[in-house]
Amino acid sequence: MHQALYRKWRPADFDDVCGQDHITSILKFEVANNKTTHAYLFCGSRGTGKTTCAKILSKAVNCLNPVNGNPCNKCSSCLSVDSGTATDVYEMDAASNNGIDNIRDIRDEVLYTPSELKNRVYIIDEVHMLSSSAFNALLKTLEEPPENVIFILATTETQKIPATILSRCQKFDFRRIPTATIADRLSYIANEENIKIDSDAAFLIAKLAEGGMRDAISMLELCSGEHNEITTETVIQTTGINSRGSIVQTIEAILKKDYETILEQINTLHISSLDISVFWNDLLSYYRDMFVIKNTKNPKNYLDVTENEFEEIKRIADKFTNAVIASHLSQLEEGFNAMQKPNASKRLCAEMTLIKMCDNKLSTSNEVLVERITALEDKLALGTFTQTPIEVKIEEPKKNETTIKQNNEIEHEKIYADKQQKKVLKQLNCWPEVVKKYSRTDVSTSSFLGMSYAYKDGDDIVIRVPGSFTYDIICQTNVKEKLIGLINSIEGTSLSISSLKVEINAEKPTFDDDSGIDEIIQNSQ
Image (cartoon, rainbow, N blue to C red; front, side, top):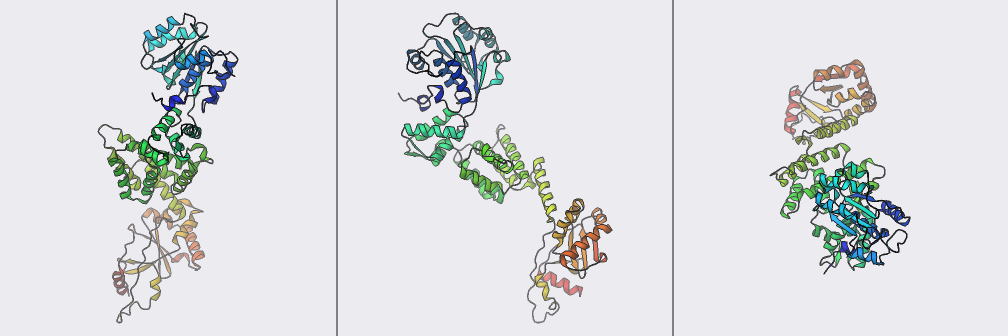
C-alpha cells in the first residue's frame, strides 16, 4: 500500500527536524544528560513538528543506545515505537477522546510500571479539546506522576489550556518554518523520490504551506501527479491558486482606472469557479508587501518573495503613496467582511470594492478622506493647485477679417474669454511657481493662493479668489507686496503694488471655442 510522502519522510531523530533548532537542541541535551521532565507542552501551528518531536522524544527516553540525545532507531525499543507496537507509548487524540472517562483510564494505568520499555509515555494531541472535567482529572496526575511516566501534550491553541496545566509543564513554542527552509527540504525530497521540480515551484509550494512542513510535502506529492516536471504553472493549476500575474494586472488596472480589466479579472475567477476570497487575500498580501517595501530599511527581512518578485513589487509600490495604500487596504478589508455575510454575492462585492478603489470620490470612509486630503496637501505644497488652462488655437484670419490680425502673438498664449466683462484675460504662467515659493515662508496663506486664479489684464495682474474670506487675506498689504515681488523676480518685470487687483469670483473660468473668443474680442474693441 502506498505511503504518503509526509509520513514516509517524517523525521526519525531530532537532527532531521527542520526549523526548530531552538527546541530540538534542548530536548537532546535533556535526554543525553538524563534530565527529562515529567510533562511537556508542545505549542504551535499545524505541521510544524509537534507530534513528530513527541514521537522522537518517546523513542529517545526509551532508547537502549541513544546517540548524543538522539534515538538510535536500531534497537528493539526504537523499532517497536516506530511500528506502533510499543504498549508503553500511548498516543491519544483529544479531539475525539475528550471525556473524563478517557483521562480516568490514563490515571489508572499510570500506577503500573512500564511493561516493556524504560518509561511509559502518554502523547495527548490537540489537548485543548479536553473538557473541563477531563482537565481537572488530569491535573493531579500531571502534577505528581509516578516515576518513569512522561506526559507530552500538543496543541495548536495554547490560550485554551488552563493555567493550572500550563504551570506544570515544560512549554515549547514551535515556530512557523521559514519558507527557504521548507523549499530546501522539498527539493531534497523531490530529488530522493526522482521528482523534477524547479526552484521557483518549490519556493511557491513552501510559501503556500505558510510555515507548515506537512502541508508542503502533501502539496509536493499532489503536484507530482502525472507531470514530468513541477513548475510554477503546475502548482498554480493543481492547487487552484491565483497567478501572481493576475494580481499585478488587477493592481495596475486600479492605478489606470481600467474598469474593463478589473471586471475581466473577476469574471475569469467566477467562470473558473475559483474562490474569490483566496484572490482577495492575495491582494491584501500584495498591498502589505508594498507597504513594507516603502516603509522599512530592510524589507527583504519581512517578505517571502523571490528576487524577481521583490523588484516587481518595488516597481509598483513606487507608484503609490502611503495614504493610498492604507486606504486601499481598508477598502479591501471592508470588501472581505462584506463577502462573509450570509447570502452575499462575492462577485458583486469584489467588483464594487475594486471600482471604488479606482475613484476615491466614490467612498466616504475615513481612510479614503485621509487619502484625498493628503493629495490636496501635496498639490498645495507644490503650488499646483490651480486651474489647468486650456490652450485655444486661433485660426488663420480670412481675407476680410483684420480685427485681430495685429495680435499675432496670441497664437502662442493661453487665454480665457470672460463673457461678463467682454475681454480676454491671459493666463499668468508663473502663478504656480509664485504659489510654491510663497509657501516656503507662509504655508497657511499659500493654501488660499492655491485656490485662486491669476491673469494678465494689460499691465495689471488680476487675482480671482473664491470668497470674501480669501479676498481679505490676499488684500493685506504685506501679502500683495510679497506677491508683486515674486512676480517681478520671476517675470523680470517692475510692477508696483497698485498693479495687483483682487476680485471675488467663486466660479471657475469657462472656456469657449475659437469663434466665441473672436466675437468677444471684436465686441471689446
